[in-house]
Every structure is written in C-alpha cells, then in structure tokens.
Image (cartoon, rainbow, N blue to C red; front, side):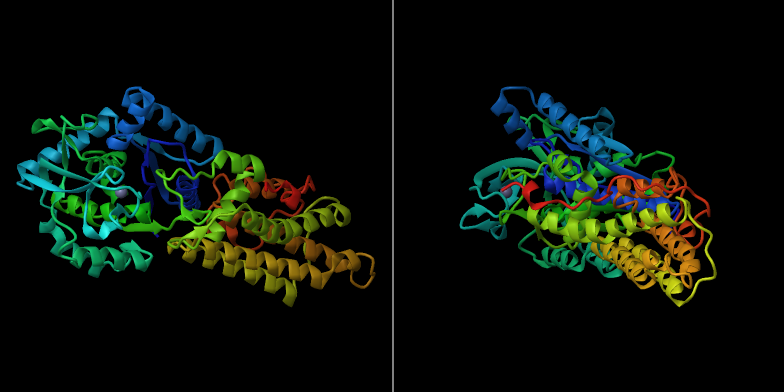
Length: 518
Ligand SMILES: [Zn+2]
C-alpha cells in the first residue's frame, strides 16, 4: 500500500446538467477516495469542469449569452449538486481558470520548443459533437457513431503534435504495465487503436480563432486556440500542482483516472503520449467504466436522457441510489438503469438483509441487555464463524476495491451480513432469553451481532457514508468514522462493552411498489 492516492474524475463538459453518467463516475471516485483515506493514505480527489470547445459555444449561441456565462452556470450546478449529495472532492478545477491556462500554455511552449509541434493543412470528416476529425471507423451509415449526426467536410491549417513518434514507446508501456488500462477489454481496445496504422495520425492540437475563439490561445501563434481535448487532459496535471508544486511528484506517482469508455482514446492514446513528450510518467491506472442505458439508449450529454441525481436522492435517499449504482454495474460493462431494479436491489440487500440485522440486533439489545452492548462469554463455533466471515470480508473488500470490482466488494460485505443473520437464526436469542438453560448465552449472541454490525458499518462507510455513520451512532459509536483505520479498526473485539445502543426508526425501510413512478 502506498502512502498517497491521487484520483481524478473526468472533468465534465459544461453544456448540460449532471445526469446518471456523471453521477456514477463521481460516486465511484468518492467511494474510492473514502476507502483509500480510511486505509490511512493521503488522498486527493480532483473533479471539475471542461469549459472550452465548440459545444459550449453552440450552447451559448442557442441562448444568446457569452460562453463564460454558460460555463459559470453549469459549473456552479455541478459543484452544488456534488456538495448537496455529500460527494466530497479536494479540488474542483475549471479549465477557464488562469492557473490552468498558464500550465497549458507552458506545456504547449515546451513541446513547441522541443520540435514536437508542427504546422500543416489537413482536411476530412469533422464531427462537431466529438470536436475532432473522424476516421471511417467512427462512422455508421455516414453518421458519427457516438452522436448520430452527419460530419462536415473541413479543411484547415493547423498545428499538430507529433503523437505517432511516441507510439512505439506506448505499445511497450502497455506491455510492461498490463493493468495500465483496466478492465482488460479496454486495454485491448486501446492496443487495437494503436496497432491500426490507418486509424491514428499525429494529433491536431489547434483551432483557428477565425472559427473558434473560445479556448486557450497558443503561446506561439495568437491566431489559434488550443484544441479542447489537449487543454482538458492537462487539468490532471494542473490539479496536482504541476510543474513545481511541492507535492506534485509524490501524488503524480500514484495517479489514477476514472473515465467513461467514450473517452478511452484521448486518455489511453493522446494523454500518455503528451506526457511522454513532456518527460512525465503516465498515470498508474486508467479505470474505464461502461454506460448506463436508460430505455435501451446510451445516456450521453448529446442525447439528453437524464436521471437527475437530486431527484433520485429525494425519492430513495442518496445512499440507496449510490448502493444501486455500484452494486448493479460491473465496473467496465454497460448496465441498464431502471427504478424497478433499484427498488428490488435496495429492498433485497439493504431493507431485508442489512436492515434486518440492524433492527433485530438493536431491538433485542434494548429488550434483553438494557440497551447496552453486553459483556460476552467465551464464544463457541458459531461465534467464531461470524468473526471469520467478517475477517474474510475485510480482506476481500480491500482486494476488490483495489482491482476496481466494487460490486464484488459489496457482495463480500453482504455475504458477511448474511452469515450474521444466519447466526441469529441459529442462536434465536428471542427464544433463548426465555429458556433458563440458554439465557446465559444471549449476551454473547448480542455482543457478536453488535460487533458484526460495527465492522460491517466500517466496511460499508466508503459506499454508504450516511447510513454507516447512523449504524455506528445507534451502537453508541457516534463519530467513530473520524480517524478510523482499516484494517486495524475492523479487527474483532473492539466494540466497547457497555456502549449505549438505540433502536430508532427503520434504517432501510422497504420501498413499497406504489411509491414507484409508473
Ligand atoms: Zn461525434
């Protein structure tokens, strides 16, 4: 385990409000950051807004306002949405910030001085949605595959980055770091792009101001602005304090990106070659997620399907929505969003399984041990089975989170909850309390369940921050997450005997079907 962890979300494009795709990536990043922090790693999470480029200009023109007004508007909405949902970030970067402009211009000048940038005329099929010239492979029936719109033919004189010079190095990097891009399907996809000679040339990194003035000016030619992707990718450097931030080298050496599969090419091809030309190491991992389909269509900014995160929060509670997003999407694959599936998942895992353990444990502690965590007697085989189920979960969660299998991490936690519920069934303290021969064991049973709940809440806290804190509070451990450390605090037997418990309202009420919108 390393001492630091630097994680980034994509910077989101500022021509619309946050939808399920943005929310998913931000939830995943928030969860990872919380987990690494819980493990004692110094963690820095960067998110932000991508504010230049043609689509922002289009949106500004539609509304008859200056582009900066559009980006101020949406950037504020993204920020307040994440704040309101409790999605924590350490820095929200905006690509229109002077600090970022300075870094981009510095990099452009360095690459220009090193002979990595040249001037040339270029023509081809240009997609306004993608903001790039398309190759034949990007077209389906003459339309852009991602945007379902016809490209325009364009000819332009522009500046190009000698990207192809770095391909041989990049292929080697992929071979030496098999998990640079993960899951593996995206590594294979990126390698296929690299090996396909016809698909990729040098990277056009400028736009003439006569056509597009909304961007960062090239430091060596005031008639041009920087191509939006080049500018956007550099945010990850700016955010970490490049070039001379004191902590930049340490954080950069443990940098990981979370991205959607639609932006694989810029991140897996453009970005590492740009860094290589600069003499900066590539990030450690590109973690690539799939799409949420709603009504069987990909959710993209352009198609405009939305599952607004604040509406989901109001309807189901944000922890329930978070849980569904991470549990029902295999990271890297596409998944179908439906409120029916969300309700089924939340009822099965949280209301029935975890909720049941919480309410039975707390109710019986109230009834049989005066609302206190009781002093346990020596445990037997069944107690040891629960202890070992939790220990297994602690180990598996760590492995699964670090390999980006978040749904597997949640499965592991819920398996331990299952084991604790089965244990309760086996010990049946509600009967044992009335049986003189067994009544003496009730304290041990309830202690075991309280301790299982404490460890479960600790493990769940990166995934369900609010509900986990609430479980701990009901065990008399309010504020226990502050300063908690994995794995040490998840070891068995740390719950203080005598800690006051409280029953409270159901933590995960069943969502009844009539509450579901049609
Ligand atoms: Zn397109």
